[in-house]
Image (cartoon, rainbow, N blue to C red):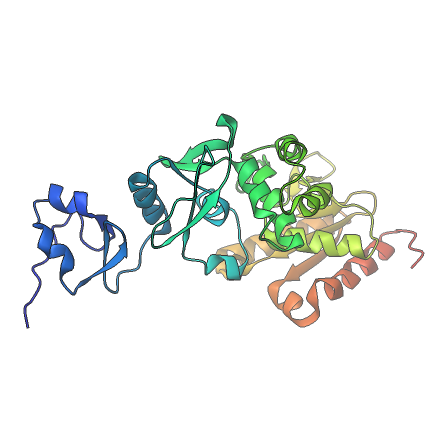
Length: 313
């Protein structure tokens, strides 16, 4: 059995084009050895090597004339959270700005779109649809709550004295402008309804889902990005959702809250909230698995009642 010679380091362990292979001084026939598979026309991938989706998108847009990443691929490049089934879509979604035809090649899902100049952007040098247009295109494929969560992600803005800050990728007005300009697009009614429930400040999909469940239970609208201060004005906590009038703070603690450093920080947060007269409700992934978001909301309702909310339910 013939043993294939190792590839040069500059193309080893990743997908590469035949042009890159030639530039590396490797003869054409090396592309047909059995340690490589044909991923797409003019593209080879070493068997068993996991590929970076961004690298794949960069490579395919580079060899497909006029190609722009769109839909799920554009969302992934923007860092937008997608549901599990969408994450398992390993095709690269491409379009062209002129709508002349769908890009076609193995490994690609082509779409026919007409894009304005303002609809086109780039991420790490990869041509993509802009944040607002990407969100609108997702309306055709995402479930309603996933679409709200995606909108919350794109417009999220947070400035904190501690913890991480977020700069919005676009504004709610940008999303609305896309909806207004594409009245006949597939999923437009869903997009219009999702936009009504989008809020600035939601930092994760679970936070969005929890907020939507609270709305279904007819709880009052919570405040996002609220700062809890002590009597001297010092910041002591940044709850995910807050009811300042009733001094109820709600936090969704994800998996990263299980590490020792974060646990210690959470203990200090809870102590500070209690010391300043706040009722704290902590929701975890385990709570959601056991009771669902609607079940968890009952604890928030009870906390609001304890805080003086005049519930009629």
